[in-house]
Length: 301
Image (cartoon, rainbow, N blue to C red; front, side):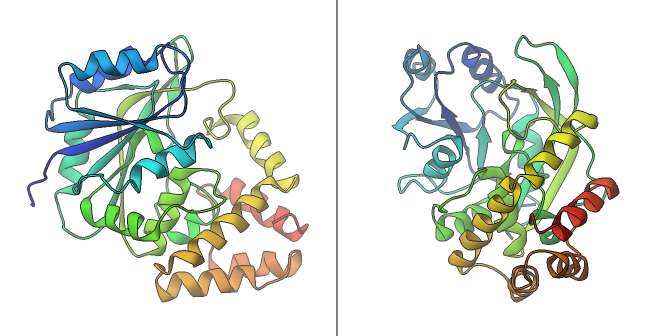
């Protein structure tokens, strides 16, 4: 097992004062105490800056100005910042609450190899007021590029990368047009042949909001929402943008490149449906995979 240097915790903020104190306190309470915090702020007009400045009196904190183009761009701004130290990184939302062993579990997983590793873990869901709302789902089919093309199973709030994985991200650069930074990381890592470790153990309280685009995983309403995004073309647009960004990196394995060609060289409609099936592209549940194929047959993907 390789000893890890300090984690750099990457937190993207925007008007997060309501819940930021609890998240900062949970970071300070980590059993793995070897960390520094980088905060990229997207123009907060509340007390976010003051809260971070107060926290910085007792902790190693760097504040940078964000690009103000949304959360995905803000996290990628952090990941690809030229001054970012080497070594492992852990992503942090501004309004979650980490359990004390979050960084320790990530550290143990990342230290097993020097090869590129993307780590993700389970979470306990809470609502705006902190009321429990269930847990993150299991992913029975495991991580793969065939899954990453159409689904994210490594939620950003639990994500950590070792130095080798971070190097892939930084060499790929800031992608253009992507909607979700965590989905992008899952696609890039699996496409580049990195290892993905999914730890089912919950490591944080994940705060869900009414405006979360992809925050709810389970239940009929969540499934209907996903189906609506597929039918109205939104999901297909995301896939096309992700594909263009992946190709531009030059980081994909030959197998991943061949899979993209198989899927996207087929015209939308029945041919695209057949290509998805032939390539083994799938979501984690049979029902969601069946819906994916049906929508593809209709020409919406």
